[in-house]
Image (cartoon, rainbow, N blue to C red; front, side):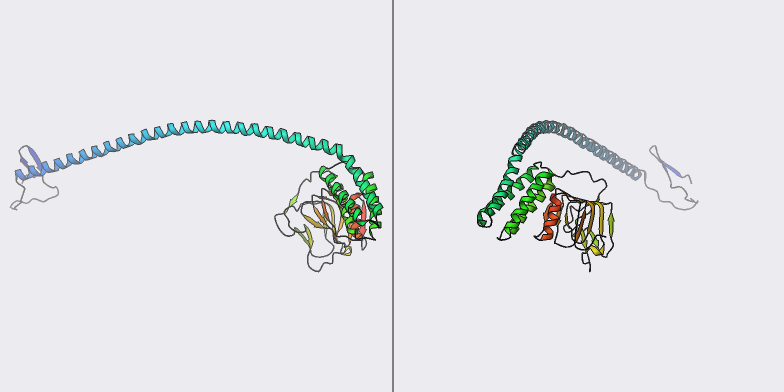
Length: 343
């Protein structure tokens, strides 16, 4: 049997791989039904193609709208950026002008303060000497008058410290002599510690005049209670620059059963200690510079050899030993040992 059938010019090929055998009955669609099936399939195909064309056209229209909106947005954004840049430039110019004016005013104020300080430095120092002399003359009969004069002298010394009014070694020696005389007379009154506070102020004034210098390589400590612990005798810390600015307690502290005596032979040598707090007791300090440190002394054993205090503050409770340490700082002493013996 021929595997092709023809109706009205259309050819239909029967499915391949079918073994047609003579004598068998095969049911085929009529020509009319076959035509309807073909037409239906063709129409569905056309509808699908039309739908695809419509979808593609829709996407193209949407894409064009998005592109147009993006172009408009970019244009508006560029205009906004240009406007903002212009305004920012104007603000920056105004700020720069104001900062320049402020800087010039600051320089003028600093210059004026310097001139005032230079012009008032000698009169202020003379006033301190006159007040101390007058206070000594008022004792022991008029302690109230002496107290007012001592407090006034102390305030003037603090002003000199803030102004960093220059003074030489001779001035500090003369002032120390006056304070010593005043302290001797104050023993008969309640003004001993008041006189001692004036001595401490003089030490801080002297320290403020010392010049800072670069430290070189510095070992800086993060915030902590203490930077270094001494836990046993015979420690030597040599040739290191420490920055204890962020340490809340003593930069170098004792731990355990240490007695803080010179006999324990703990030595800090050729070191620079910056910032923070440091108690002097119990250590051999040799060729050490303290910079901006709050220095404490509790009246214990201590050795000071070529120790320099730069812009430091002092917390020395009153005692005869504290007076010796304070005078060492005022007069830039070379060597002082208190208690025990140097190692």
